[in-house]
Image 1 (tube, one colour):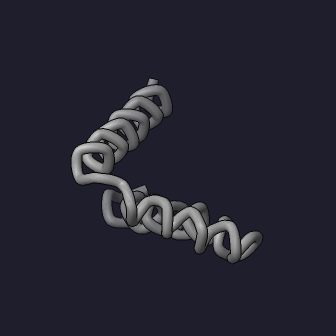
Image 2 (spheres, rainbow, N blue to C red):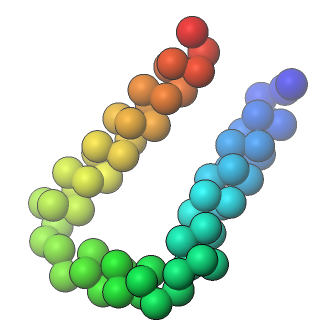
Image 3 (cartoon, rainbow, N blue to C red):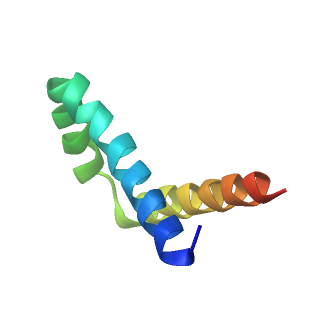
Length: 64
């Protein structure tokens, strides 16, 4: 599999996973977005950083 195919596969999977919550529970998803919108910048940055680290860890574990 080429690099572009792998990238498109990863993006496709990301969109599938991102779409599960609003599809299955739109009301709860909307409430979660309201709560996230109320968080301060520092908390959002920390959450984003942790998500990136988790993603990198999964990628690393998937390669080895």
